[in-house]
Image 1 (cartoon, one colour):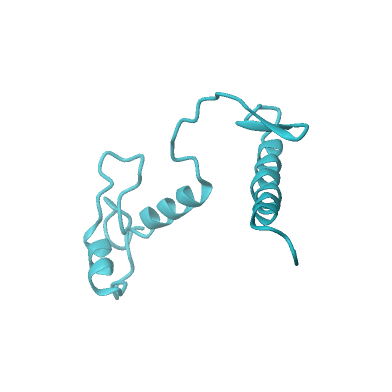
Image 2 (cartoon, rainbow, N blue to C red; image 1 turned 30 degrees about the vertical axis):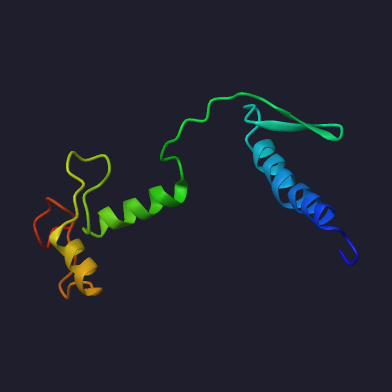
Length: 111
């Protein structure tokens, strides 16, 4: 953007990397209307929608499942999802134990 002002650059940055990304993600969630704002000509129109926070991130679910299956911590759905001795050792030393990991509550050799 040679010769552009800071305002012009900022406007193109917001339009190209914020608004278009927002629209692309929101449109992929249709038929549910998840728009918090939409373009209305040259303006933005905002909508007061609830935005509840929760663990609905598939990457978080995948990592927490892998950690539980490796026996490093209890699963999030279990009553106790504390770090196991193997998990504490990994945090302390940065090394996995030499013996195979077992799932919490499963006798060694039966995992």
